Image (cartoon, rainbow, N blue to C red; front, top):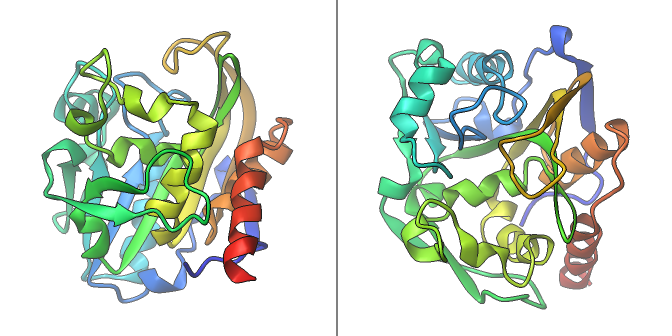
Length: 264
């Protein structure tokens, strides 16, 4: 667990965004990019092709010969291939990049390193997370509401890496098991199982998505015009919330306190 509690975060206007990747991306052999592409819906429900394209260009510049794997697991009845076609993902990929469906990848169990696991002592996710040199999460800034407001950014984006066959509940297209006892609580387990592995985070805040209910694909867009990025997914999400006039999610503070316990 290498990230620091107060890693610097870059905040730039979307029109000025030029991605500077973290150190592990430089001359890497394999890089994993996890973008928020879970729905066949345009930004801000998903990340914009402008932001994702800039991330991929920045990574390619840092590692001209790297294999870059764009990995996502959808939360829709529409396949990842179809979503990628509708949103224009394939246009961004050079011959050294490929799009992979997380639900179709070999899996492994990741221990939950939290000193106080909420629900899962370990979590199952693609084994490829341990087979690459660098991992980047590219999230969209979203607020939904289920019992309380939920902020989704680069950490919540990692839900798409968990196999639906393992974590489904009533609906086979979603990961209902990861909503119990609540998403903010389970996000603590997510961070300490796979989130801490990520070397960098980007949050597309050009438009902020706001839903009046739990539906993460139906709501309104509020113009913010910013992109946030850095090495620490917690710091990036915190900054996105501050600049985006959202309260700091309790789960970010809870994870920070648990990290302090581990470092004590």
